[in-house]
Image 1: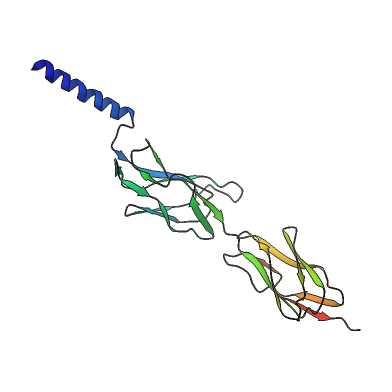
Image 2: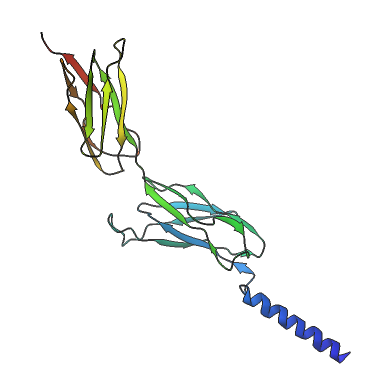
Amino acid sequence: MKKNVLIRSGLVLALAAALASCGGSTNYTIGGTVTGLQYGPLVLETNGMTKEVMPDAASTDIAVRNVDYAFPKQLEYGEVYDVKVNKQPPHQVCEAAGRTNDTAGRLSEINADFQCFLLSPTIGGVVKGLGAGSLKLNNGSNSTITVTAADPVADVPYTLGRVTYGKTYGVTIETQPAGYTCTVANPVGIMDDVDITNIDVTCVANPT
């Protein structure tokens, strides 16, 4: 009888050692790393919890530091988690970059990573009055577009490209259409969070 008790005790100890080698604790912290976060807060959510993540105060536009986060409550072994963005940070969009949904305990650590990018809306407008030919617009060296007259004559919408939040844009006419002189309205600005659609171009036929 005493021998059986000793055997059972040994099995319990062996099982405990095995569990310890697989991660030890039966409670798991949900956390991870956010890269590229320049504005805050980014709000994450999972299992009835939310977590605000703020940028590193030492970050600069040139060198953006990674930020580690952790939810306040731990999960028990076997609980399912699914970390999602509850609220995007200002001027940015963040997306999953690691294992953001799984079962606690399948791995020894939970690393639900995210990466963030500055918004890059488009700039554009409408070309008016162009009866023939085409003109070429540019935004510095970033992007160019050739707009061709509609047949029959009509306003022609255009999109010149994307500009990162906070950057300056400046639309100019690189090539005037033959027989017309065109001018640009609202050509210069600093990019915000939404598409710019009022950079209109008006063309007038040259006197004959």
